[in-house]
Amino acid sequence: ENSIDLLNKYFFTYFNIFHLRVVIMKLVLMLVLVAAMVVLFFCGYYAGMLKERYGKNLVIVIPICISMFMFHLIWALTELAKSARWQ
Image (cartoon, rainbow, N blue to C red):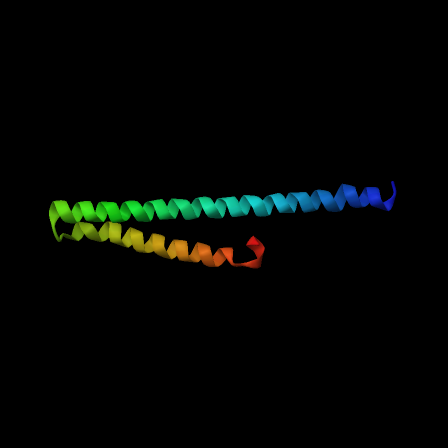
């Protein structure tokens, strides 16, 4: 085998696998981001429902705490997406 065949066999195969890993990581990042936004939306919805049904009660603290966690998760994922590894 000449050097071009070896280059095609080893380097470009690795490059394609690496590129596929980056695409999969971006896809997972977007899926987790969408899931966190959906949970954040429903936490707001349930907080409103609990406030309407029970008034000011300590039960409303649960969706508020979950929504704070989701907000920080979304913020962390967007900062993680700025990394060179995700580009």
